[in-house]
Amino acid sequence: MTSTSQPTDAGPAGGAGRRAFIAAAAAAAATAAAPGAAHARPRRLRPLFLGTYTSAPGGGDGIGLASYDDTTGKITRTGSITGVDDPSFLALHPSSRTLYAVNERPEGEVTAIRLSPEGRHRVLGARTTGGGGPCHLSVHRSGRWLLSANYLSGSVAVHPIEPSGALGARTALVVHSDPPPGPGQDGPHAHQIVASPDGGHVLAVDLGADAVYTYRLDVERGTLALVSYAVLKPGAGPRQLTFHPSGRYAYLANEQDDTVVVCAYDPASGTLTPGDPQPTGTGPGASYPAQLVVTRGGAFAYLANRGHNSLTRYAIEGDGARLRLLDTVPVGGDFPRHIAFSPTQNLLFAANQRSGTVTVFHVDHDTGELRSAGDPFSFPAAVCALPL
Image 1 (cartoon, rainbow, N blue to C red):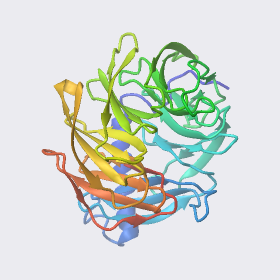
Image 2 (image 1 turned 60 degrees about the vertical axis):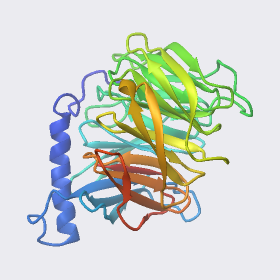
Image 3 (image 1 turned 45 degrees about the vertical axis):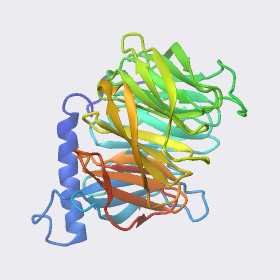
C-alpha cells in the first residue's frame, strides 16, 4: 500500500534524531571496544557502515558494521548485517533510524534495515526495483521517497517510505530511451539518482546515454515527470554528480573519457548546462573517475580515480563556477570506488574494491590537503563507506 503521509522519522527533528542515534551508538561502541570506557570517551567512536559484494569471490557476508575514532581515524570492525545480498551502495534516512541498500543483482531490489544504537539492527524487507543491477540509491530530502538507479536496464525507480522506515510498493519506473546510446555502449546505464539540494527536482546520471536527466517528483504520488536532459560529449560516460553547496553548480565525474565537468544548474527550471571537460590530473591511461565530494563550505572538491588509485584535489573558485586542479594523492588501496566525509569532515574515507580495504585521510580545512590516517582497514570487496 502506498504511503503518502509524512513518516514519523522525517522532518525538522531529523537532525536531533541523528545526533541522538550517533551518541547512543558511540556509547555502545565504546563499551564494546573497552568495557567501562563508555563514560570515558563516548563521543570519539562513531558508527561506520560498509557496502560490499556478497557474490564476489572472497566477498562480504552482508553490510559491514564498524566503528571509527573521529580523532585518529582508526576503524574497528564490530560485526555485519546478514541477509542482504550484494549491498553495493548504502543511504541513510534523514532520521538516522533506517538504512537502505541496493541489492545489485540481475533482478534488482532495495532493502530497508531498521537501525538500533545498540547494534540490534533488523531487516525490514526488500522491494523490487523493476530493473537489473541497481547500483545507486538516495532518500529524497522529505524522507518520504527512496530513489534508485538500475544500471543494467538503464532505468530509475521510486518507492514510498512508510512511517516504520519500510518500503512500500514501487510508484514509478522510468526507462531511459532518448538520446540513443553513446559510442561503444549497448544501451542506457543509469548510474546515479539524486534530488537537487532544494528537493525540487531529481537528477539521474546515465553512463550509457552520455546524459543527465532532470525529473520533477510528485511528492504526493511518487511519480517522475521528465523535464529535460543534458547531453555530454559522446563517449564521456558520466557516472556521478555532486552539487556545490550553493545549489547552482554541480560537478560530474566522467568514467569513460577521464574528465570532470562543471555544470551550471538552474534550480527554478531544473536545467543542467555542462561546461568544458577538465583533466583529472592522472596523466595518460585510463583512470576511471568514480565520484566527487565537495567540502561543506564549498572550498574544495575531491575525485576518486579507480584506475590511477588516487584522489585528486581541486580548489573551487568563482562561487562554485570553476575547479582548479591542485594535486593527486595516492589512495593507499586498489580501485577506490567510493569516497565519503565523516560528518565533521575531519576525515575522508575511501572504499577500495579490489584490495578489499578502506583507507582514511585527515582533511585540512584550510588548505584541503589530505594526510593518511594510518594503515588501511581490511574489509572484503569494500565498495561503499558510510560514516555517521
